[in-house]
Length: 298
Length: 254
Image (cartoon, rainbow over all chains, first blue to last red; front, top):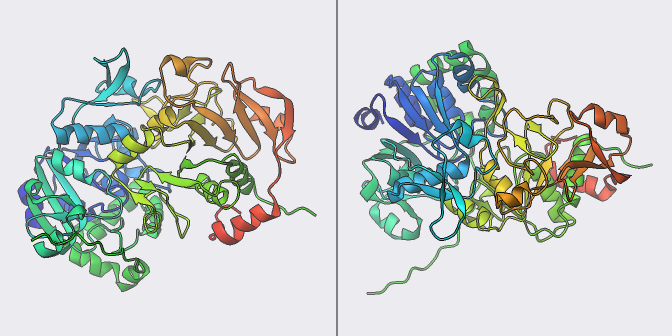
C-alpha cells in the first residue's frame, strides 16, 4: 500500500475512493494521511467517515459529492467544522445528487461531454452549482438537465478478490466502482484476497473491473473496515455510531487520528490493534450462491 | 382496554397502511423501513423493497442501520450498480412509491435536506440530496414521514433540495416532472394530504388524543384542513405484535 500510494497519488490530485457503504478503502485513506498528501480534490457520492477523517487531517481543498452524512447516524462533524469554521482549513464544496454523481462518472467512463438525466428541475441545486446545466433535446422540445464528465486522476477501489493483473471480482453492492475505474486516469485496486487467474476465469460475469484499466493491485485484508466486504466481514455499525462522539470535538478527532492512523505503521498493525474480539464481532455467517455451469465448448 | 403504543409506532402503522396494494417502494432507513416491512406482512404482500444502494427485492434479516447494510444484499432478488438503479428502476418509472423526509418541508411538500441558513455560509450543513432530488421527480408517488415541529414545517425553505409541488397548482406538469409528487405526509400527531387543485398540504386526520390547536402551533403557515377532518385509526393489536415481536427486534421505536 505504501508503494501504491507513493507512486500513484500526488499532491493536488483529484482522487475518488469510491464504494457505496460497502468496500470503502479506509486503508488507502489512512496511508494517504500518513504520507501527508495535500490539496486533494476528493470525489465520492457519500464522503462518509473516510473523507471526514481525511478532511480532519487536512488532506483536501475541495470535495465533490452528493450525500454528506454519517449514514443512519447523523452529521460528519469534521466536514462541518471545515465548511462552517474553516478548521483545519476551509474546504470548497461542489454538490450534486446521487444520480448526478453517477452520471458524471458514467460520462467520464464513456468519454462523453455530458450525461443527461431527469433530475434538478425545480431544485435549488443548479443555483449553487453552475456546472449543472440544461440542454434541449434535438429530438423533441424537451429540456433536460446535464452534468459534466468526471475523470479523476486516480480511483482507489476495494473489492473481495482480484488476480495479480487486476482482474477484479465484485459482489454485494456494486456502487459506481466500475464507472469510476473506467473514468479514472490511474486505478489502484485493493482486495481482501489475491487469487489465481483461473478463479477469475471460472466466473467471468463477476469480473467488474478488468486488468486493462488497473495500474496497481494491493492485497490488504480488512482494508475496508469500518465499512464492510460482503461475506468477509460485517459493517462495524458500532464504530459508525461511536464516530459521532469521536468526531464531534476537534481534539478527540485528532486524538483518534494520532492513535489509529499516525500511530500505526500500516493496515496490518491497525487490524492487530483492533483486537480479535472486534473481528469476532464482525464475523458473518455463510450464505453461498448456487454454482452456475458456463459449459465447456472445446 | 386498547393497547398503548408510541408515537413512532403510530407513524409506522399509518405509513404501512398507505402502502396497500403497492408493488414497488423506494425505502430509506428508520421508520419507513419498518413501515415497508410491516406492510409486506399486512396490506401489501407483494411489496418489493428498492434501496438506492442498488438493491431490488430486499429480505432483511435484521433492522438495517444504513441503506447499504449487508443484510439487504443476502437473499435479495437482485443487486445492480447505482447507474442501473437510478437509470433503469427510478428513471425507468418502476418505483410506485418513494419515502422521503427532510429537515424542512413547506406547504407544497417541497423538501430541504441541504442547509439551514445560507448555502455559502451555513448555520447548519445538512447531508444534501443523496438520491432525494431525482426520487422526488421520478417516483410515481412520494410519501413523506416527518415529526411535526414548527422548525420543520416552515413557510419558507432555506433551500429547495427536492421538488414537491413547487409553487402549487400545475407547476410539476409545466416542468414535465414524470412523477405525481408528494401525496401523503405522516407525522407523529396527524396525517396530511395535498389538495387536488391547489396542491397545498391539507390536514386530513388527527391521531387519537391530539387536539387541533396542537397542530397549528407546529405549522409555520395558516393551515388548511379537510372539511371532513377525521381521527387516524389507531394501531391494531396484530400490527403492534408484528412490529414488536417480529420487526422491531431492537425496540428502537418503543
